[in-house]
Length: 143
Image (tube, rainbow, N blue to C red; front, top):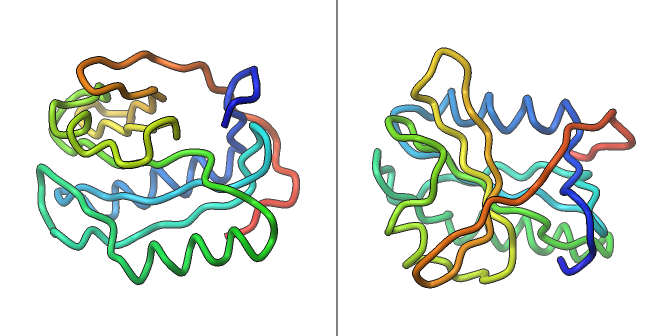
């Protein structure tokens, strides 16, 4: 995802992503957002194969199905999301160590406060950088 500008997330995709995280709590939720360029147009919730409150690993079958669906419509993974049910929306040491998709932005949704906090990051082996993103109106979002 090398194009300039903020990641564009439609309101309903944002709401579905947050709802998925709330529904799975206290287990960490995970999933993918797909699209073209910087514009998200699909939401792919994945099961956490670890069923853990502190770690996640996407279910292999869910991940393959999501990637195949994206390829079939010439889309790509624009972001990977997961929740922090009891911690801030800041990358953890585990997040940095398990960064298997290098340049794909990571969305972390913290469920600590009354209102979930959504932040977007670029992860490096020993550091992270916050990325800009914005909510946009819906334009053909696929679920």
